[in-house]
Image (cartoon, rainbow over all chains, first blue to last red):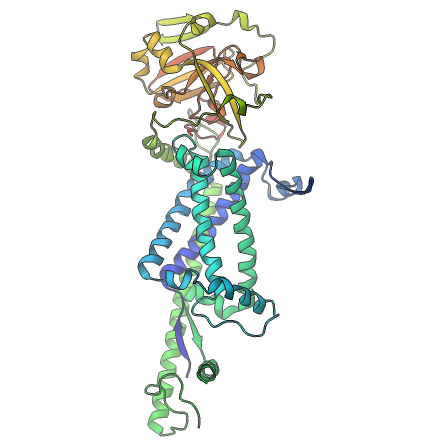
Length: 232
Length: 278
């Protein structure tokens, strides 16, 4: 007989789906702000590899000359981004769910095996609980990054009133660079995340909405056999 | 022999074909299906409703009318409300004891950046410059640059920050605004909420909350890099206020006035935050 397996708590699902549009808006308004002084580029060996951002990019997304609007949006949604992030971290600590999320000692070794498995280079993946080693690292990094965005963001936002924070971030100029780089990190995370979610399939995806997965007879049998095989 | 699955106590054995067991199993399965359906319906239903509400909220914000022009203008009304609310929060955080970081002279680059020349028409002669300090509707103080230079001089090397996002370490010198207030006995005026600065042609004007104006690093500056200020950087006297973005650092000051209401502010009329505090 099939079975309901609880996967994601209601709180986790709320945090996730609130964060998604809020982080999107922070990134969007951040781009409106960045346009005002778009000096960052990737330079290798004196050659400009990529310029953030090409004129066509601004034109396509209609980003130009919207600095004041970007700032107003950024300084509104920052409150939601901050509150959601803080509540999420508090929740994982209080509920004990951090145990499923924080990398373990073996995670750093195992993450490679997971990656190799995902790339179809390796047949088997290391055994896991709720999240595999690569997920543990990714989901914890993203929280550390979020923390970094808040710290560097505050350093840029109030460099005089929070001058100590600005100092910790390596000064105003450097804090702005980190703040920007972290956003690139989110975009990178997002692309991989979407790819992985698509690869994992509908059943996995829907569990982030419903909270549960239905495991049928066949899978149950397979799981039992696996368990049996491992015991041998 | 088949392996029992997970918990042999609860899961019926596949070879158990007693009719009672079969019916129980079917009932349980139907119940489970119903439960799954119900939970999925609630979860997806609320998910769609909430995401639609979020999207609707965004649409509402995006289509919200521009604020009615007062001392501020150019922003969407809800965003302006948010800026003003955030200002109230930030003002509680403000302290005159929080100082901007200062730098050694060696770190000052030679090419002083300049930006935006509103309120600075050509054919201006700094030698003829005079400044009006409006003490009251009936009393105005007229000062020359020598009057200002006679006051105690303060130097400041700090990272100037433009709202556009660039920053530059610059070396300014002038009289602290608080020293200026003390010398000309403007205590009554400084007890008001705001101070306003404007250029002679009234094309550029800023309003500063009094705590920021009286911050110990706020200068009426007449020197940069140990020399007079170049015309494009605001000769002969400009505001240097490290607790604000560059947009508030008015060049070529012609009038100073005091008020309990927000004085007009050029960039606050263009959608920018009135406070713009750092």
